Image 1 (cartoon, rainbow, N blue to C red):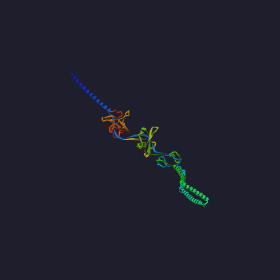
Image 2 (cartoon, rainbow, N blue to C red):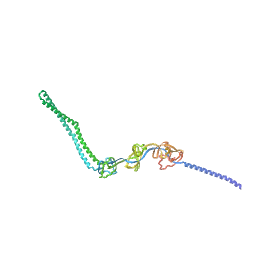
Image 3 (cartoon, rainbow, N blue to C red):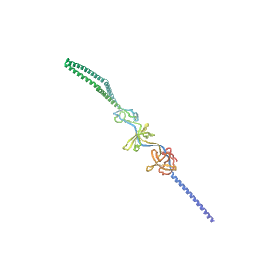
Image 4 (spheres, rainbow, N blue to C red):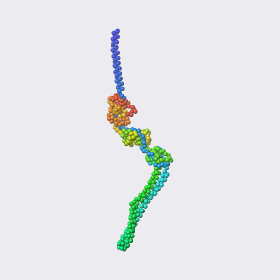
Length: 437
């Protein structure tokens, strides 16, 4: 019996050891497999995959600005007088040349009337002088010249006749000498008459006309001056726009040199900004722009109308003006706004989300390309312009390639990656890009 029990015990012991070894081996294999799977799960980094696309990009310069009207006029009266009445109020829309206010002007109206009468009188005198007086004087001079000529001719004949008789001895010397004196007097009278006629024709006529014209112009100038003073009492708008200021009331004294009314044209608005020099060199007059301010649902389309040729000595910046229409006059002068100016447009750029670009400490740029082997491979790239959340790639990528859009920061090269679902509000995902590999 003892021998049989010992034999039985020896047979059971190996079987138990074999079972224990088998169980231990199985546990080891299971443990090793689980550790390997856990390691793979840890190294497969969840990332978001996007596709490199071709799209239109715009290089923009953005700056804060202050709004100004397209035109403004502080209307200053040229005379000092009480305000008779106002025809507009603050907020009234006016057109160019519209009568806005009237100053007290009864004394000016009387002076203008008096000077108009003097002008009318001078005009009548000028007409009479040029049409009647001068021709009569010239005609009289012509008749006097003709009479003197006839007298000279007659005296010449008498002298010739008496000289012939004197030579024949039929006439005394005394009568011949008297005839010579008469001939000389007649010749002198003729020359005087002729010179007077020539003077009227050459000088007298011009001087008479000049004198009459001078009197007329003097009277006309006084009349126009009095009329201008009267017109100064009527305040008219030099531009179309809106009345923004009216400090006085009817009956108060308006002083020359002090603004009586202010008119602003806000049908268009000008946004003025100071831009750093490096950005300003990219701008030119005519570049497209937008103006965004509180009170507008959408930015207003505008254009660059001025890029100052000189730097501001205080801020070393360049002043830039952007002008655009002001529909319904919702934008008000003095308001702060933001302007965006388009300096360059690339219609067919290779673009990636800005979040996908990695920048090294030395300034180099790269992206993580999602390879077909399920790993992320770092690739250097060269960038171009930036438009919002998208950057142009000018070298290193082709349209259609897939890259790590989100989650590439700190990811080692050749890391195992897995695709993560994109969030609904992910704005870095370009249109048409792939979310799953």
